[in-house]
Length: 331
Image 1 (cartoon, one colour):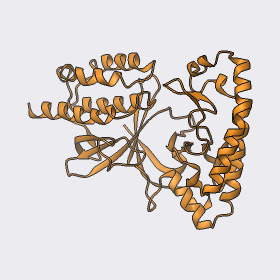
Image 2 (cartoon, rainbow, N blue to C red):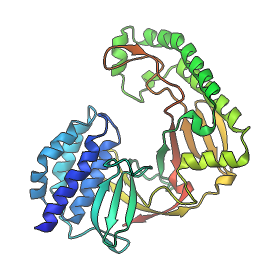
Image 3 (tube, rainbow, N blue to C red):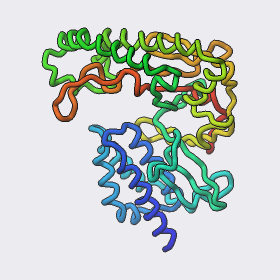
Image 4 (spheres, one colour):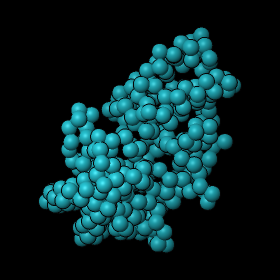
């Protein structure tokens, strides 16, 4: 009976971290699935799920438009999975799971922390994706500002002007495509219909200026920036494990990340359109940072006010984890 109570309490405490996140976080659904899949292996029963119904219902309110129903279907399928008698990592039983957003002390790319019976903690990163045919695993490792590439305050002001200059041509392009501006916010994120020449031109200029400045930095400073973006600290990976979940939630795979295998001193950066590419010693692109506007060149906020957004404070850095780290799937 004590184990049952602990698992329910564990789930509630972990979910408080999820409930603190902003509505519409696209990665949240995968973190929730990883947590409850792990709890099921630890012994969470269907009766426990019944007890947790109010908490689970609260999680649906944090989803974006299509995800509540997808998550409901997954929780229904979870009830058909066998209840585990214990979840073991590295020969030790997982006795607790903490959500890294429960406190402000846990920072990095990890989303969950497994606490083992000896008291050690294993940081676990969770993301949506699939292992490619060649074994490559990609993940967004950072959402950097331009300053993490060494840009100065004066450069940021220059970027702001580039963004301001993009406003008029952006509005012209979007109005020609969608005469009613109130409909722009309904265009799905990532849709080709959101893509404009004005935005791409502005982002490409910022990418080139960022790299032109980056290449003037001392070699050790360049390497520090690269390590920072890739979350490599003291020669160690940013987490111990990575859980990769397919978009349909039906495939969940666990990988152990044991060490850093890339020589960061051999990595170079170059601008390529709206991207900043990380290039290995063999001229292979091992990661990209997308230069982008935070919320678009010109957009309507939730209060109906039209405004611009920053072009240098919220970029996406996606790397090939398998090029950076030694990884092995845990069956």
